[in-house]
Length: 298
Ligand code: DDH
Image (cartoon, rainbow, N blue to C red; front, top):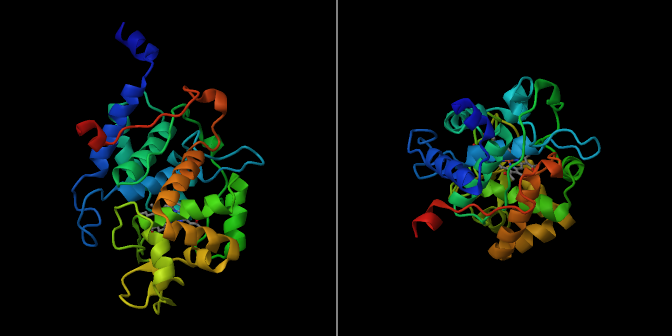
């Protein structure tokens, strides 16, 4: 009887809110992850956001392959793709939650975690709905679909146009680099982009324009550092947003108007999280706005 109940279980928005709340708790774990670098709340927020993005950003609109539907990063070789180095941290964290809420698909869990990370770290509300299903190893997309930080504007466009994004959406999505940091033992790059790596802000764009960026002198991959404090970094692909005429227009607009950035990021990120999911799979015809922990406590 109990098995029957379990299979017939149809989760409601409230059930997903419970998962959201658990994710919010887990990413706020005050453990010692990265604590040598910054001690503050939401330490796991950025890496969990990166998992949601890399799980979705493999989408190829021409073939309809990749994207968040099947959560294929659970499998090799995708889990070993260079771009995904370090994301085992986020996947292991999510695995704890999967054990508690076994009814949720990995794709829904990881994308909901991306939403929770953005919202809990004081970002915009991001519309989200469930419907992704767990796929198989045979669904793993080829390597090379995620952006390479050492490249220029053409590469960025090739990668994001393939997913179906335009220049404005590309620049909005890149504002996620207000959060987190590069880890030398993961990507080879090193350092945070902003002074508040667990607060969702438009500081990424502001710093791009306000600081003087110079090439860092070191043995690692080519990256920029701020001339003044030498404590922040930009990837070559980040810096391109101030060099390419079309990208620059949007980056400047987001530096000047945080509300515009929040609105555009929310729309582009919601779109990213649904890439590769057939519309008929979605449970709800309209997306949901999940409540933050603060919303529920006030
Ligand atoms: Fe990113 N990103 N990203 N990124 N990203 C890295 C970290 C984080 C690129 C390269 C890197 C997006 C776009 C791009 C986040 C979110 C998003 C790192 C460092 C590299 C390298 C990884 C490490 O060493 O741990 C490139 C290239 C692009 C590009 O667009 C050209 C987008 C669109 C997002 C998003 O979320 C929408 C986040 C968050 C991090 C910080 C992770 C952490 O552990 O901290």
